[in-house]
Amino acid sequence: MIKHRAFLALAVSAFLAVPFVAPASAAEGQVPPPRVKWSFAGPFGMFDRAQLQRGFKVYREVCQSCHSLGYVAFRNLSEPGGPEFTPAQVNAIAAEYKIPDGPNDAGDMFERPGRSADRFPKPFPNDNAARAANGGALPPDLSVIAKARTYERGFPWFVIDIFTQYQEQGPDYLVALLKGYAEPPAGMNMPDGMSYNHFFPGHLIGMPQPLQDDQVTYDDGTPGTVDNYAKDVTAFLVWTAEPHMEARKRIGFQTMIFLLVFAGLLYFTKKKVWADAHA
Image (tube, one colour):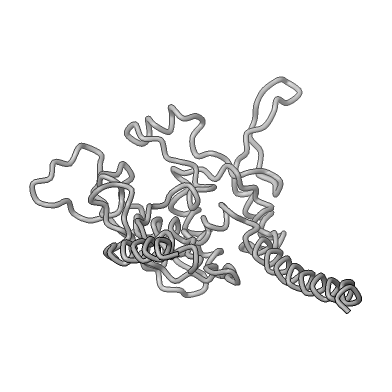
């Protein structure tokens, strides 16, 4: 018992001796992104419908010229838990796109107006064309970018995240990336076509600064700032990466309530069944 206590004390001392430094990043020298307050954070968080609609507008007017959204169909925009556009709005949005189709009766391919069942079309006909238009870089599809891009948090932060349920590393990183463009440090050799970004691994990124103040006019009067653009389009991309997040959280909470009630029933049933045996 004494040995076990000594070992436990040693383990606790080692844990407390670890310095509580800033979150570690995947690349050495990379600045950790600041935390952002999100409406969808936490076990009861929900998407802000107005923010998702604003983020969709930023995507359409800024991002879609280079980045695809291949896993999202127009009809998803009207589903519960998302931007919740009306079916008429979705049909109008889809009709603005040209969708490759065919062959027709003559055996030719053609383009037609989009329908709600169609997925968002790619901005380039193929990857080679995309690279040629972007200096050799292939713009990634943004459908699940909020899940695919994140940063590492060193010990003990990843343990703390388990208890605080912090799961917004990806969104925080995307906001920081979109706002992190700056002039390179003096004496830094910048290759042609590259930009300097505080939060991108290695600080050299092939995407030019995409956002500027007053670039997109919001219909609801929200100020057109880079900060708002970055947060809104990131929230929209979180939804495209996990469109059923609200349903998942709701079902998870209902399941926990059911398990608690079920455990209570089992406990009292056990006491009832074994009451006579202990009499």
